[in-house]
Length: 294
Image (cartoon, rainbow, N blue to C red; front, side, top):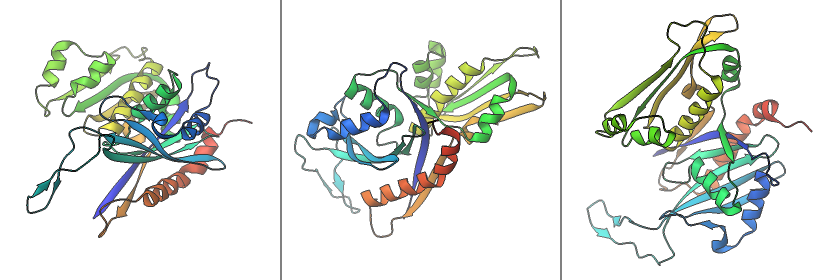
């Protein structure tokens, strides 16, 4: 059986008044013992499970523990058996990450059942009582240049589909109640929204706001691929040539296929090995673009 591991890349931007780096945060959390490193919000506690601070980066595992509504064991013939768990036990979903200090880039393995990028943000902000840490999705370098060269953004199209798809707009304050009710009527209902300058060739949509919305949708897409289908910017570049950029196709992601064969799980060593392998394949290019000046 084949298992595909997917990875997303983010630049970590600390609040301007922060006296601590993200790497220092990871080290300090790793020094905590037992439940001291636990973020027990709701029925899915989160904890840093493993951390290796290397010469230039951190390789870690973060776990999401399912404590309620535990499914039973089941044989192919149909027999079931309740899992006998202690009160402080649950089912753990572990995902791996790498944080590279010189570029402030975090690469997180995507797993809809484990810790998402928003879950990780909530975790570190809770432990340190800090607010405002940003995890900005990274675009391919060529896409950055194309967007930077846009003199005018004349149209911005997005399409969303999936169960509860109205919530993404509700969270962002983008949609009235009637539209939300219609979207939640069925998971087959899709919504397409176009922001356009119409026939005014001199008008441009604000690039900063458009990119902020795009980043929020990309983070949601990493958590639930069924929600967001397309995210397209159209405009004119500095030569006044028309440009059409599909942002979802240009955000930096990667994947790796593992053949499980007879084994039924991905071991910690396998997951960490793949995480390191994917990071090293992007490391030099990211260093060229994002390395901090000494």
